[in-house]
Length: 339
Image (spheres, rainbow, N blue to C red):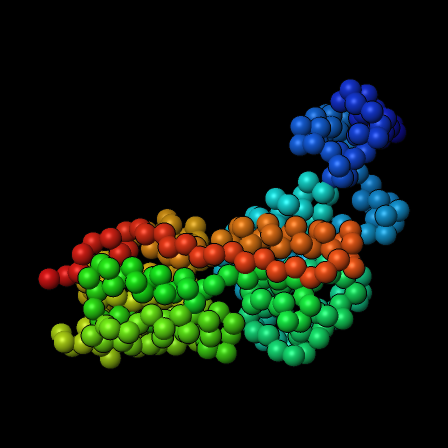
């Protein structure tokens, strides 16, 4: 027995719209949300699927955008991807997740691989940046939009945020809670986030009775746990015991909370704890984590809009979008300092 594949015309008739409107709705070009939902419902009823290969050949596009990140285990990238998908999906684009590794060279190699033509553009979140990586982005055969540092000096579209100001807001918050002995738990200083967040802490931490900094090997929970153990071990005496720790991201903060408990310290009773990125993990953790939101979903949406525009018109000038930080206060800092 042979089965007959549903046609585009049958989908149009089922949806009660024109053939042209049906095509636009299925391909994500120039159709309203209501029209898209109506046409896709009709296509699902009939078992119709778009011929993606044929479409790509006709339009000379892959309808794929690469999302290149350093660590697929970091939940901040999941929140970015939500924003990216929200923008790209209605236009018929798929998101291909790739890992850059933690070096600028590995990110540059990945950008160079765009010559093989497997995507129409890339949203890149590099942990480290150097001249070679910037040159590869500038010479890439498809548009590359960077989330991280501002790239206006290099003619590259980018989405940036002021994480230094965000760390400053966290420091001022724990100061306002009456904390007087503060530690900063940062990631590697040769990374874009590590360098900017250290600058923010150094600028804001004046006036505390004690100031300590500890550098973790990475921006992960396990690295945060190891580094926080070192931090608490050298500040264990009654006169030097820290009553606040500002961490450079939520994962480091969660590791630090575990380390604090190992040293018999209650959070926030003995030591207030803040993170950065405002991840879902931090929101559901116990205690829920005071954190600086850097607008991860918003940055993802903005990057997707830029790369989408560049796929339509590669000659348009580079654009820069800045997303401001916002302190979100939760349980990890809301109690007063221990007596």
